Length: 208
Image 1 (cartoon, helix red, strand yellow):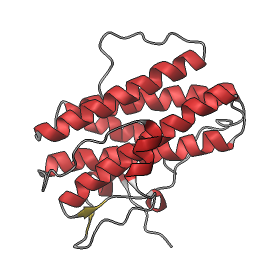
Image 2: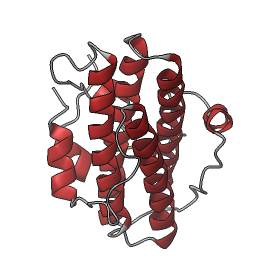
Image 3: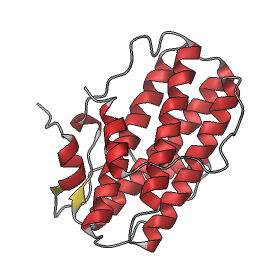
Image 4: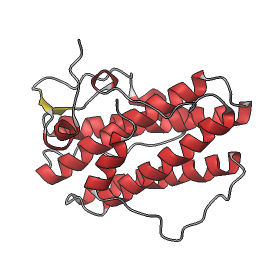
């Protein structure tokens, strides 16, 4: 049976490894090519404990996003254009995960994988295109808040820059998916940020 991680594990733990990081999702190059993205340099070396706590939490958010978009595409309720948008969003989230996993590897830690966390969703979340889009907007809004909060609090400048880049990408997702849901593409001049505790509590809503 796969080992399950608690919220405390995500914030304060991490499995140490002296071996190379094992990445179940394949090479980053394929994701970057698919998404038209150039990943930030992940050669940051060992990070302070506070920075690693944020990275562990963001790893969990990325695993949730990957799981959600996989289910969304598998629901077959999306029209072709919405499916294309979410397929590209999935590629972006996979690239984010690979970057964060590489950052953890630089500190001798093995990032959580899909086998470590069970995610759960509201009833009917994948029953219609509208329900899928509504949940996508909720998760993207939360992910943006998580990244904005982390980027403003980590102590390592290169990491803060990378997290701000990812936050910009999550904002792109939010804007485009809002349009697909016939909502305004943007609203807030200063999108809300989340503290680590708020981010963790929000994540708990989607864990079994």
